[in-house]
Length: 136
Image (cartoon, rainbow, N blue to C red; front, top):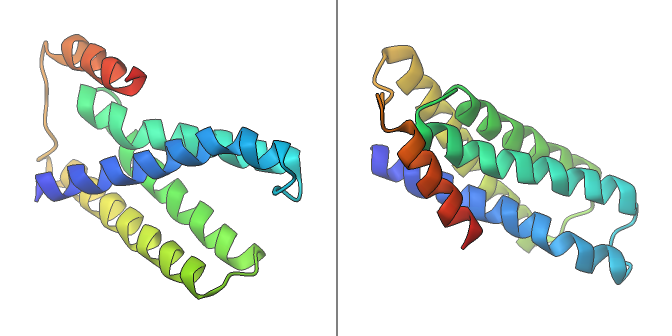
């Protein structure tokens, strides 16, 4: 089950990071209704994307991973409520919502049951590997 959560976390993080990377294009070409709000939402997505992977990977502050997944759930619900969405957008938001709820519930369960991995002495190594992967 841990592998499933890692795949979901990676996919959600990639979506959040792509959202952040595409924001300058959307603002520059006038696709964002409120550029400042769109930039703030993209920055929030960047924080959530990093929070979905890095804390659990390094073993430090692991509670941030399910919190980031919960924040992603709240962002998707807010997006769904405040924007007019067509059928494809609703399907995409529902998929992201289900993925984020699964990660949040699973990782909160891992923390509560004590099955969260402990990486004694390996945190700096994995943290460096995580930064290397993020820069690529």
